Image 1: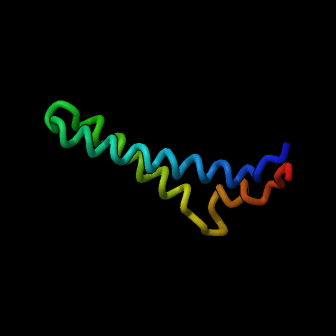
Image 2 (image 1 turned 90 degrees about the horizontal axis):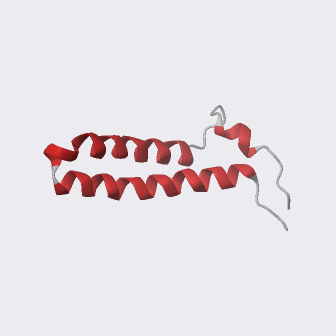
Length: 73
């Protein structure tokens, strides 16, 4: 079985979490802001952080070290 490179798996997982967390944060904010504001803010910040790290292509970032690891295939 051929597995993709670890950097590809990590980046795609981070972007997926970012894409999933942002709509949930918007839903919490839309439903009842006064009750769920901590959940909405936490999920929004986490979603944006996941997207930022997953889509970061700088050479000096920590995730670029994982991109250099060889894959199984």
